[in-house]
Length: 131
Image (cartoon, rainbow, N blue to C red; front, top):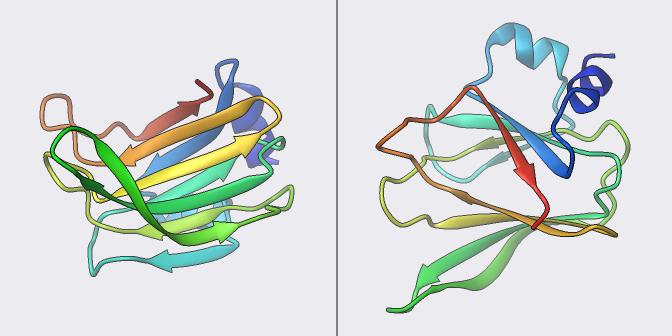
């Protein structure tokens, strides 16, 4: 099972793995359970939560002058099943992010801002870890 293998080789404390700009082969191998299109964009990624994640939320966020503030949950999955994979289509803005992913489990919360890293670029695979 490719998902099991990927999660088994992930660093300790990993809440989710992101596969950025998945290839056709990766989309066939890691079959998404759900497609969420936020923007008309060629940018997309697969979110593969670890088995202990009990809730996934996607927050619309704004900068209030001093910090990023959660405005509204635009997506929630209160009980992602064992093989759950979310295919998310959205642009990654340079600078301030518009969205924040949150994964909750007994280990706590793991968060990820959807933004473009202009310095290093976006890696093919990212690990989202618990704080």
